[in-house]
Image (cartoon, rainbow, N blue to C red; front, side, top):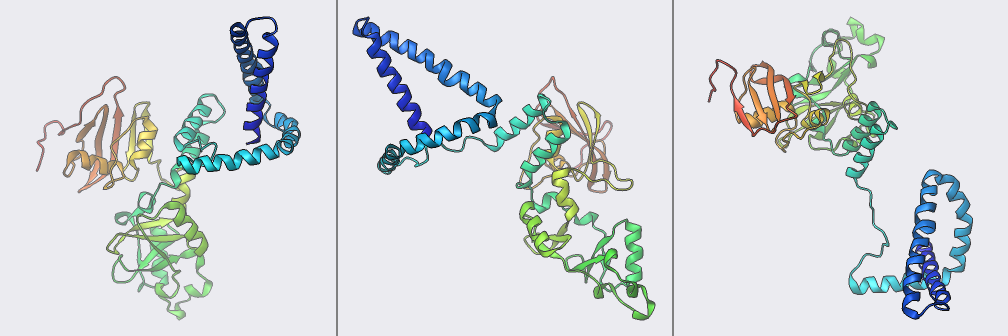
Length: 373
C-alpha cells in the first residue's frame, strides 16, 4: 500500500509541476501535450525500466538500500495509507470486489515453465529439472499410482515358521514381506528380517511369523501420497497396505515407493530402469510406469483416465479388449506396441513418436494375425 500510494503521489505531482512550468512558455493545449510526453518518457525510463532492470540484477543489494527509506515514507504517509485502506474496504463491500490489491500471479503451470526455462538457460541440469517436476506432481499422486500391485506382491503366511519366512525373503530379495492370514486380503502385518533377534532363530522357541510381525497401515488406494507419507512417518511404519472400496488388498506401498516419486527410480541388484530410451523418439516402458511419466519423457500427450493410470491401461483402453503380443495401437502421432505379454498382462510396451505426423486413433493386429473378440 505504501509503494502504491508513493508511486501515484510522485507521478501525479510530477505531472502537475511539469504542466505548470511548461505552461509559462506555451499555451494551455501545447503545455498539456509537451508535459504528457515528457513526463511519460521520464517515468518510463527513470521510474520503470532503468531502476527495475537494476533491481532484478542486484535484488538483495537494492532491497537493503531502499528498505530504510521505504520505512520512513511509510511512517510519513501512515495517515493517508490508513484512510485509503478503510476507504478501499468500503468500496469493495459495495462493489463486491476483493480486499486484496494483488492476487497470486504464479501458478503451478508457470512454475513448470520456469523450470523448463531454467534447464534451457543452463541454470538447472536435467536431473534437477526432473526432481523439481516430480516434486510438483507429488501432491497429485495417489497410493494406487505408486504401489506395488497385488499381482507382483510376494507374501508369507502368518502361520509359517520364522526360518521358512527368512528363506522366502532371501529368495525374493526383499528384507520385508507382508504376512497374511487366510489370504492376501487379510494382511496381518509385515515380516522384517532386520527386526529379528538372535532368539528368533532358535528352534527351541518355535516361533511363527505371526509372533514377530510389525503392524501395517491400511489406506484407501485413492489416498494422496503426501498424506500417506506423513501418516507413515508419524506411525513409524515402512509398509502400508492399499485397499479398494470393498476392503480388498490392491497392493503395497513402501517408504521407498513414496521416496521414488521425488528422487526417481531407486534400482537395486539386477533391476532395470522402467523407462529405457531406444532413440530420441522411441522408448521401452515397463508395465508399471504411469502415462504421465511417458508423456513427459517423450514430450507428448497420451490419453489418461480415471479407470487407468499406466501405459498397459492406456493400451487396453485404446483396444477395448485384451491385447496380444506385438499388437500396435495409434493415438494421434504416438504408436504403442505390446512387446511382452504374459497371459492377459502387458509387461513391456514400446512407445514411438512420429514427430512429423498426427495420425488418428486406430488399432491394428500384428502381421499375419486376426483380431479376436
